[in-house]
Length: 199
Length: 199
DNA sequence: TAGATTGTTAATCGATTAACAATC
DNA sequence: TAGATTGTTAATCGATTAACAATC
Image (cartoon, rainbow over all chains, first blue to last red; front, side, top):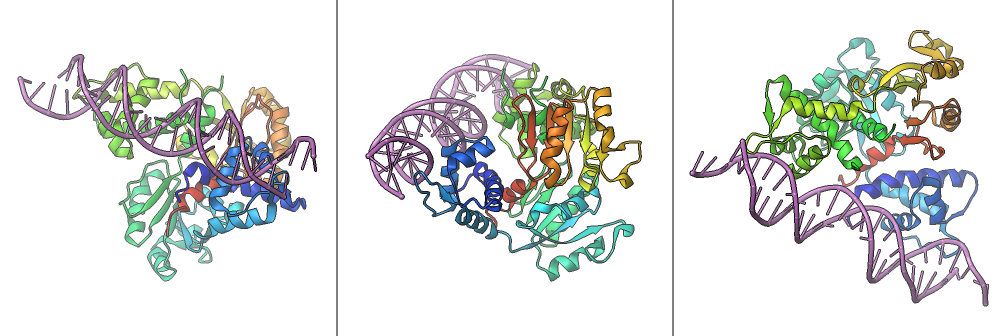
């Protein structure tokens, strides 16, 4: 069953709402309420949830909050057993290393930089160590937070070392072969959407 | 004329391609080539460009690179005369303050934090200064990079001070009144899309 | 000229929303 | 029970892609 990226984008939002209700000891929740919390349509919420859960909602009562949390988590957990690395331990790289809500999605085991002052050999290593560590841990996922000018060459190197999934924060559209999955996280584009239509 | 957010998202990508070609002294470019560079459909590129430009492409030759750059820039420039601030001068806040490709889109004039060690009174100020600076510069746009737990209350405060457009990086969906525009930059959701379908 | 590329009109595709019977 | 909420089937909406005549 194909799940559209629109749906995938909404699932973490549902998860956050559900966890909040769970913390407040609410045991059941209706699609109507989830939708309201997120400014969405309740039919859409039910359809999304049906795609990733076998759970039946009960008319008038809604869904079991805990079971729904488990279902969404296990949907995502299927993809997260792999470790990942960050290339570029600048401000953005370090911010992402510590970004609180990644805990449940990805395990960043190391960052690399060409600036030896940043190296602590604990989580931040000199870039020459990259090959060794990628191979040792059989890493397939990398996050790129190097400057734009270095991004494509780092990307090529990573692919050379066996990386198959790349999350790129440098403001360039990186070119990768067909067997490598890339997401260019375009903060400028995101900002453009926000600013569009104001004033 | 309404321009969809799908189109708005692609425009900065076109701009980057065009600038690259411009730097290499290429004076004309076809929609086919732009599309190829970005892995898009050329009809889509032409339609997008037609929405924001009066420029006619010439069959067989393509579009004038410089004029197209000007048209996209002025489309965005209509929205950027306002200054903005960042609340939360942690790693992510400082990364965004220095994110290179925002230059053309937004003018971040100050950041605020509750940690006095971060304050330099140059670009980073103690949070108590926020009200004064927002009013002095008539700021309408704010970026939130505080921890999740503080985000909603900072958001409320900002709105109270007159902020109308908010770009939120904390992993919560902030609630705002109808007259305030918000974009919750959900990095976990973005990551979820990337990881979906692998393995 | 020949043909690559354009802009436009029509077709397709997919996502969202509406309608509604089933049911706890 | 009554009615709020469910899941499903059908309708709508909008974005993407295809087809194609015009043209540099």
